[in-house]
Image (cartoon, rainbow, N blue to C red; front, side, top):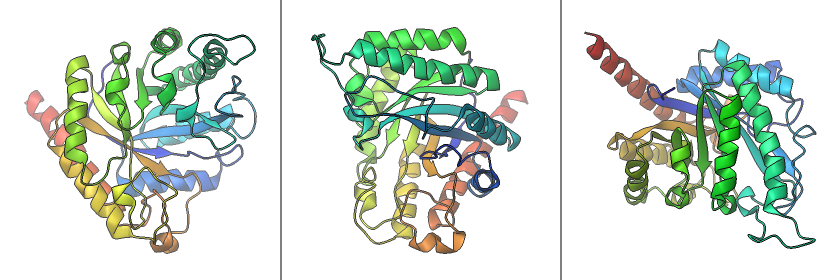
Amino acid sequence: MKLQGYIAGMTWGFMGERGTWANTTAAFSMEQMSATTQVNWTAIAFSAMQKTAHSTEIPFWENPTVSDDEVKWAIHKARSLGLKICLKPIVNCSDGTWRAHINFFDKDVPCEPKWSQWFHSYNRYIIHYARIAEETGCEMFCIGCEMVQTDRRETEWRNLISEVRAVYSGLITYNCDKYQEDNVSWWDALDIISSSGYYPIHDWELQLDRIETVVMEYNKPFFFMEAGCPSRTGSSAIPNDWMLVGNPNESEQAEFYRTMFSACEARSWVQGFMLWDWPAVLYPQEIAPTNDDYCVFGKEAESVVAEHYVSKTREFVDVKESEIN
């Protein structure tokens, strides 16, 4: 299976807790996302919670993780809207530690938590949803997101990829964190390279130059599994900081998107975006000017995204038609 066409995507549902999907509110959210941003893909994203960065058990079957029925509902809803789907299970820490800091000793020490214990639990988590992705026909499956300290554990990741391929027949990717594209040594085992594109507005060319060397080395398709910027003054300079203090600023968010799209337009190897993000429970459209989060609903950036996506998907159709003729 190969990647076909441009990924004009948006991440949907992240931070959703059990009971917040599979209802009219969530359905309205996804319908609005599809209608206003002109996406052709969505990443359905959700979290399971381990207690701390050094815990070895990921109880994905418990609250607050959305239920399997809710995950299947979201997949079927996206399919009804004509969207291709990447299923994206994520692990987070309930004590607030960012998942990039999940880490253990490289050598086993008695009475200390171990990588082998953590990967045993993580593999169980990921394989569970890989089976659901196969059952529901998801076109893509993401095996991990921004797990920076785990990236060096090449043997364990290659083993997980093999286990996923045994139960899932679609495209497989891993969402590495920003600045980490050249630190992953096992891209060859995956179908697609993807990363989080939270780069400062004036740094895109430099970072794209760096990423390009990785894409050329591995000769794999590439897209940004995450990318975006809060609608907040100062966020375009540090778009990964969701805690940054600043006033609501639609124009700054829109300019970030224009700059990012323009820089990536000149790089044919950038095959799309799964922008961050679109919640299952939308804020009322009338308060969009005062909302300072990543979501573009009702904001100036919404039309920037839609125009770019229409242009890129139309471009792909034109190329296919010229090949046929």
